[in-house]
Image 1: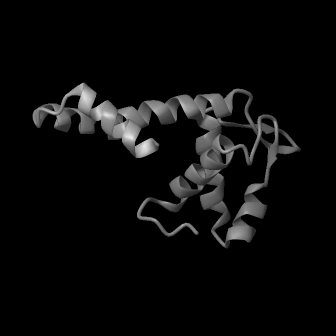
Image 2: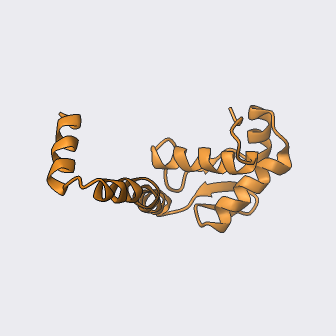
Image 3: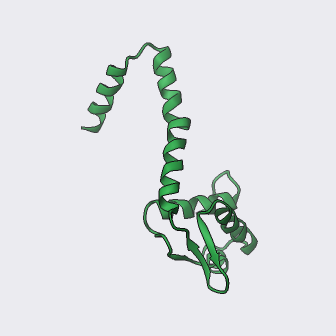
Length: 118
């Protein structure tokens, strides 16, 4: 499952972010422990702990002492907002810059999008 080029802890963090964005993990819902996660996915517990700590630092998860980790209130909305921002910056802005360089008009872009989505 975690076989991409990025470090495994980053892939785990992205997996959990995706679970939150898609609604598979909801606000205030408990996530599996790092031990459960490492056993389930057969990874080093320290790697899982690093991913969870990253998400705690980002405010996506919070730790309740003696109970476990939970999805932070507002985490889905925050992830959607940052995902949208990243989408525009990483994908759409370069495409629009290329379109402008090629002389493609806004109307042509809109017509193409409407044709592709209908």
